[in-house]
Image (cartoon, rainbow over all chains, first blue to last red):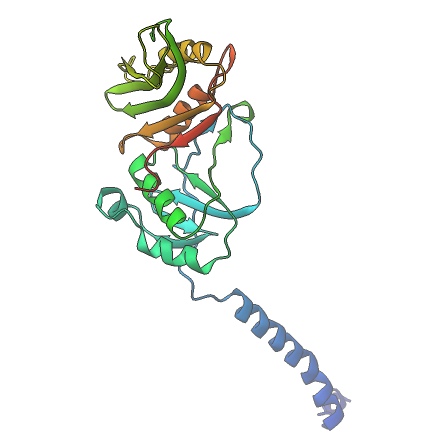
Length: 149
Length: 114
């Protein structure tokens, strides 16, 4: 009786194949997930605790388009960091070359510029000039509606 | 303020710096001694009030220009490099309208193509 309980079952080739199938499925799903979530792009963290949009009394609906975010830590387009800001605020170059090169690769549409309220105009001026030079002519500086605060 | 003999406004620029706001206008002369096309340059400085731009003073001066030339809607804003985006947006809001209504709704930023 005891021997019967711990008696080894006879190996069956059919059962082994059947048990492997869900494992292969899971492995494939895991591989797909890893491939989709892995990216070599630089960090895309544009959120900052100190980021504040300027406020406005004007009411102009936003058009769909490409979004540029300017924070203390850098200039981002569609959440991808393009360049830092310090060297462009203090530098003498009017054209921001990395930004120009990136804007050249994107299909032109409306460009919404979301800049921190404390961003100096020296940087905004260069961003606007660079965007215009890259062929982006529909530019908007985004502000938060005062009544919505 | 521009004299009562002044006509249409040709150029209207608001310059903003740390030292305050300056309104500059080129206004056509219409007095009896003026030749056709005579333009008079007019400007007014508004020093900061409690460390901030004197936006109420700016609106008051712009309202008088608007009364003189109601058809003009265009104004150029020329911020200095040290002006922040927040201040720029406040300035653009101030020149667009005041409590009495619309002032200059077409706001252009100076120096984009330079």
